[in-house]
Length: 154
Image (cartoon, rainbow, N blue to C red; front, side):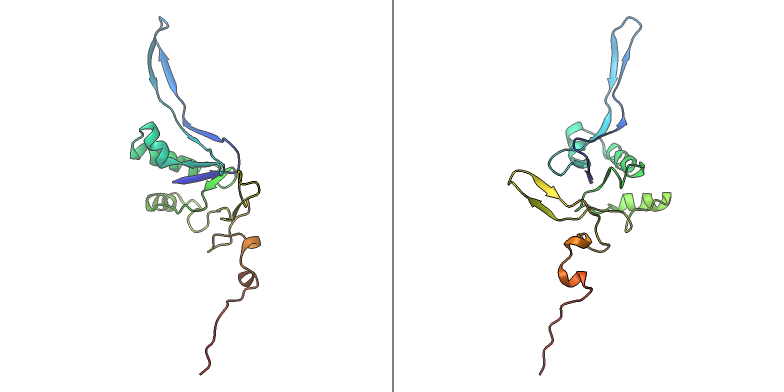
């Protein structure tokens, strides 16, 4: 799953890295941590890319995805990426937990642009339900509530 942050370089720790030491001061072992690191121009965290990079199991990746969705910061500090749909396993889990995601979750507008050919900007508004764009970026006919139709007279 792809998540998108409104902050640059956001890091959300799920399980911290743990290093155990013996009484002698020698390191006994290290348990790797799990965290979501948002990066790139659009501040994206892709759990499947992170899974391959850190060699997580599918179960560990899914645990992290559920953790990210279940946090109070979901839909405020970060949300699903604008092109990300909820996988069935998350949808069923959310229904069981009575979480208000699915058709009601907030996504950011898909409108992107570049002002200097180096930086990519994305609209920060939430989408109009049933579309990929916010109200400001809807086509003019959709904003007026009209459908364009062509009639043929015989």
